[in-house]
Length: 304
Ligand code: CP
Ligand code: NVA
Image (tube, rainbow, N blue to C red; front, side, top):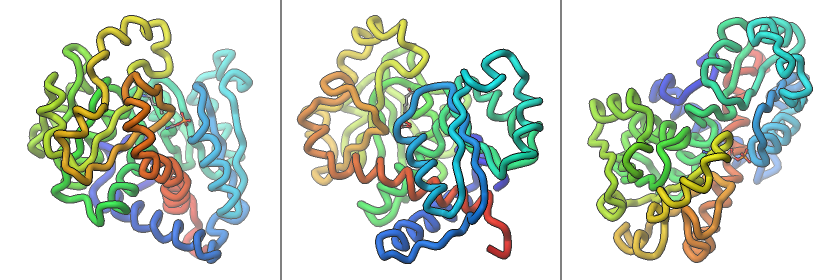
């Protein structure tokens, strides 16, 4: 693994290696055994969109590993004034040891990796959010013991989260069902790949998707960049909510996850959110551990 651009690119062993190392780093941190695996390394963090978790967990994670993270708002970089990504990639590669980027187009992340000579990590694009789903898989494994054979049901928009969850679930041999309104399905190529490799379903029937689920998952109805569609989406997605009726058809010990930020009483009721806060905030914490694992695997010197 040279970069983390999309979850769909990773092989099953890459995912297992990341999750195992994330568990180890979490254990080391909780037991005051942390080591500075990335002493002196520098990570540039380019943000074209807002962030709480991604920014803070990468910055804190890099600090804990003995390295340094630089917050680079795209508006303040020359990218914001039109400097091409291929030039930015070649320049930043001469100063830094890795780049994390949050942006709109997946192609920008791919171009950064293609033209630069250092590892690139996708911190969310319109197409995928691989770091989030790695933290989700870590959390599910932590609560359920293993992943294979579990059923995860995602209710809501067929967005970046849905695309990455499908990739992550199929690669770890979970069963995944998606419930979304017609016209708001996940990426067509990812759905076709999932249908060819698993018993994947995508339906408008929420209760069918949620039946006997081990994990229920949702995300906002309007993602970053879709603010102008927020009103119309509120009516389209009205019934695509995790609430007591949905929880009732899932397994009795169902976990409920949300990548956050959450809009209470839109995609999830306040009641269900608070009843499952334990899982949801462990999931948020696990961003830190899993991203530290990704950075160590991508950036550590062989002798460190
Ligand atoms: N889940 C997530 O990526 O959160 P932020 O947008 O706050 O980084
Ligand atoms: N789908 C959301 C995820 C936020 C973490 C967005 O892209 O805004």
